Amino acid sequence: MAETPLSSSEITLPDEASTLALGRAVASAVGDRAVFALSGQLGAGKTTLVKGIAQGLSVAEPVVSPTFTMLNEYVSGRLPLYHFDLYRLGDGEAAGAAGQLVMELHELLAGRGVVVLEWAEYLERFLPDDRVSVRLEYTGDGGRRAWLSAGGEQSRLVVGEVARMFTSR
Image 1 (cartoon, one colour):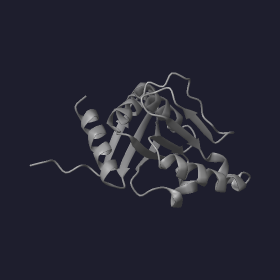
Image 2 (image 1 turned 60 degrees about the vertical axis):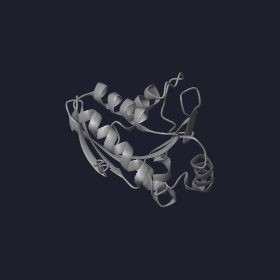
Image 3 (image 1 turned 90 degrees about the vertical axis):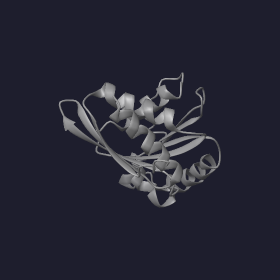
């Protein structure tokens, strides 16, 4: 009998290296396309997680937060990585950019690649149901906790595979 894929998982990340490892595990679990909606306070480890995803996809370029451009594209890896940082949408100052971002997002979602959105809550209503939501929380002493939840069949497969990798460590 086949195992039912998990729809959620909680993972303890004691240090930065484990947050990077989570990103690499996420990257190894995706097929041709995936969407990751990241949330958490400043310093929770969102960009570090994206760096791990980039490592897992064999992205050659250095990954930096696209806080001012709102989107960085990395195409040198196994799959294209589209890294959004929507922090500026929260202050209303860049709200005029939201329409353009939604159009770009829908174009990217139609093709191959991994779309990762930091501060995803600012465009949540425009995101596909089949996505992995990742909430990160800083727990002190360099540690983090991650909660992964799946919104569809493909996302459940990813969450299940990542949870399996982290419980077998």
